[in-house]
Length: 70
Image (cartoon, rainbow, N blue to C red; front, top):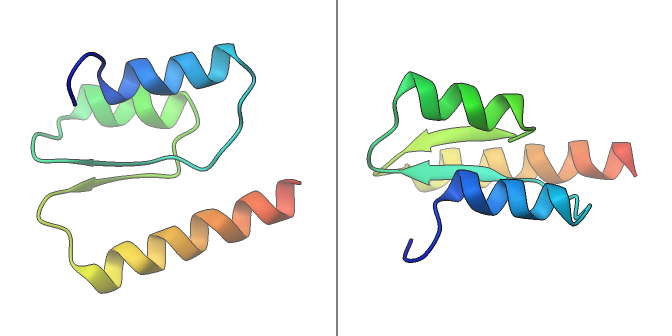
Protein backbone atom coordinates (compact mmCIF):
# COMPACT_ATOMS: atom_id res chain seq x y z
CA UNK A 1 0.00 0.00 0.00
CA UNK A 2 1.68 3.21 -1.10
CA UNK A 3 2.28 5.90 1.50
CA UNK A 4 1.42 4.01 4.67
CA UNK A 5 1.55 0.47 5.95
CA UNK A 6 -1.51 -1.35 7.17
CA UNK A 7 -0.25 -1.02 10.74
CA UNK A 8 0.13 2.73 10.26
CA UNK A 9 -3.40 2.99 8.88
CA UNK A 10 -4.71 0.97 11.82
CA UNK A 11 -2.94 3.37 14.19
CA UNK A 12 -4.33 6.44 12.39
CA UNK A 13 -7.88 5.06 12.64
CA UNK A 14 -7.36 4.37 16.34
CA UNK A 15 -6.03 7.88 16.95
CA UNK A 16 -9.15 9.32 15.32
CA UNK A 17 -11.37 6.97 17.39
CA UNK A 18 -12.65 5.25 14.25
CA UNK A 19 -13.62 1.73 15.21
CA UNK A 20 -14.14 -0.64 12.32
CA UNK A 21 -13.31 -4.32 11.98
CA UNK A 22 -9.85 -4.73 10.45
CA UNK A 23 -8.54 -7.76 8.60
CA UNK A 24 -4.97 -7.69 7.33
CA UNK A 25 -4.24 -9.45 4.04
CA UNK A 26 -0.58 -9.57 3.09
CA UNK A 27 1.82 -11.48 0.95
CA UNK A 28 4.49 -11.10 3.64
CA UNK A 29 3.10 -11.98 7.06
CA UNK A 30 5.53 -12.45 9.91
CA UNK A 31 5.08 -12.91 13.65
CA UNK A 32 5.89 -9.26 14.43
CA UNK A 33 3.26 -7.92 12.02
CA UNK A 34 0.61 -10.37 13.20
CA UNK A 35 1.38 -9.67 16.86
CA UNK A 36 1.22 -5.89 16.41
CA UNK A 37 -1.98 -6.12 14.40
CA UNK A 38 -3.73 -8.31 16.97
CA UNK A 39 -2.51 -6.23 19.91
CA UNK A 40 -3.97 -3.15 18.22
CA UNK A 41 -7.32 -4.88 17.74
CA UNK A 42 -7.25 -6.49 14.30
CA UNK A 43 -9.79 -9.26 13.76
CA UNK A 44 -7.48 -11.44 11.69
CA UNK A 45 -4.29 -11.57 9.64
CA UNK A 46 -4.42 -13.59 6.44
CA UNK A 47 -1.70 -14.59 3.99
CA UNK A 48 -2.10 -14.10 0.23
CA UNK A 49 -3.42 -15.82 -1.73
CA UNK A 50 -6.55 -16.04 0.41
CA UNK A 51 -9.19 -18.65 -0.31
CA UNK A 52 -12.42 -16.78 -1.05
CA UNK A 53 -14.49 -18.98 1.27
CA UNK A 54 -12.11 -18.33 4.17
CA UNK A 55 -12.06 -14.60 3.44
CA UNK A 56 -15.85 -14.40 3.35
CA UNK A 57 -16.09 -16.39 6.58
CA UNK A 58 -13.60 -14.10 8.36
CA UNK A 59 -15.42 -10.99 7.11
CA UNK A 60 -18.72 -12.35 8.41
CA UNK A 61 -17.12 -13.16 11.78
CA UNK A 62 -15.61 -9.68 12.05
CA UNK A 63 -18.92 -8.00 11.22
CA UNK A 64 -20.81 -10.18 13.71
CA UNK A 65 -18.32 -9.31 16.50
CA UNK A 66 -18.55 -5.62 15.59
CA UNK A 67 -22.34 -5.78 15.73
CA UNK A 68 -22.19 -7.35 19.23
CA UNK A 69 -19.86 -4.61 20.48
CA UNK A 70 -22.07 -1.83 19.17
